[in-house]
Length: 242
Image (tube, rainbow, N blue to C red; front, side):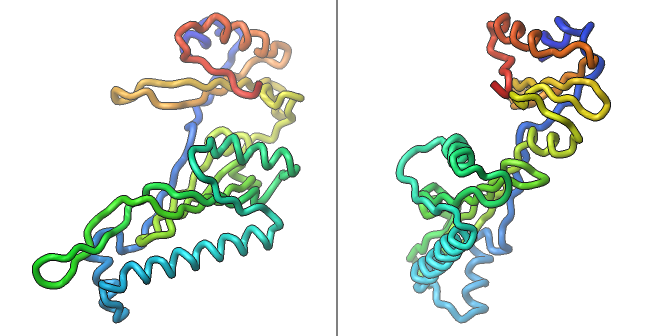
């Protein structure tokens, strides 16, 4: 990205760096074995009933997800094997003309942090485990957050993960008018914005980021963007929106 800014600095008046993704994780207060055992004890549930209890909760969550999809007239699909979920869901949204709200609910077996019952000296104990179990994905086009999803594990402790796309989050806060390819934007201030995506080294790791380069209203950066991508032999610059 620095190469791009240096090459086209005469046409750029400022930049905005955007986090590529924001992930919020939530857990119930029983995410470790001892807390889960107290949860069962307080409710009079024997540890030997752990498996049956978990299966019943899984079924409850699955039925609820199916009911949500049916209420919104959206598909509930079980996917078997590897699927690029985001691409798959975006095609569904495009096919069905979804502009806001629930796109679909996907279900698949994935590895999740949960517990298993172990027998030994004395009474049985719960131990940490990471089996594959039913996992639900609720995909939305949100008015404020754009394309996003909520991932829910259907096994104790029912962890939840909310994924928000950083690009869409910033775009929703720009009162702007898009061009046909929705890549070069013309906000109320009259200046044009072009989006670039790449990898930035941070703490020894290459982390995703996005930069928004702002040019004068008479100088659209689109042609410069294209030449930059053609000149970029290191693979550090990826153009969004094509």
